[in-house]
Amino acid sequence: MEREKIIFLRNFFLRAFVVGILFALFYFIATLALWNNYSPWLAQWFKLDEKELGAVTLNFFANLRMVIVFFFLVPALALRWSAKKF
Image 1 (cartoon, rainbow, N blue to C red):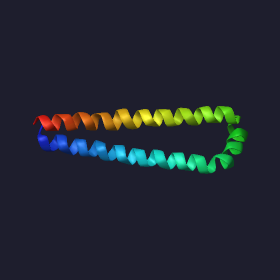
Image 2: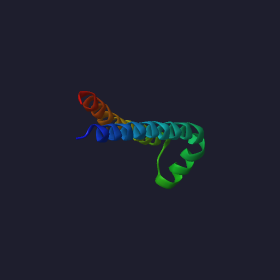
Image 3: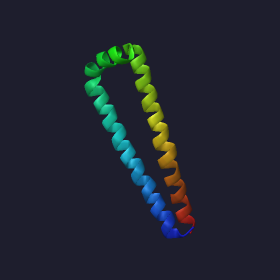
């Protein structure tokens, strides 16, 4: 693979990682700000109590972290390592 292509892909994955972190922060702040507003609504629509809603929310953020780190950060770091070898 050419060095320019490796650098382009590395920059792409690093930017995707940063955007993913920004979206995760937005989701976290929105969740904290709107918890009292949407938890009764979700309890009514989806028959979730607050304990189950907390577990679903925690599961969402854990999965989001895994996707951001392993789909974006790890390939970016691997490409950075590969770009230094050329």
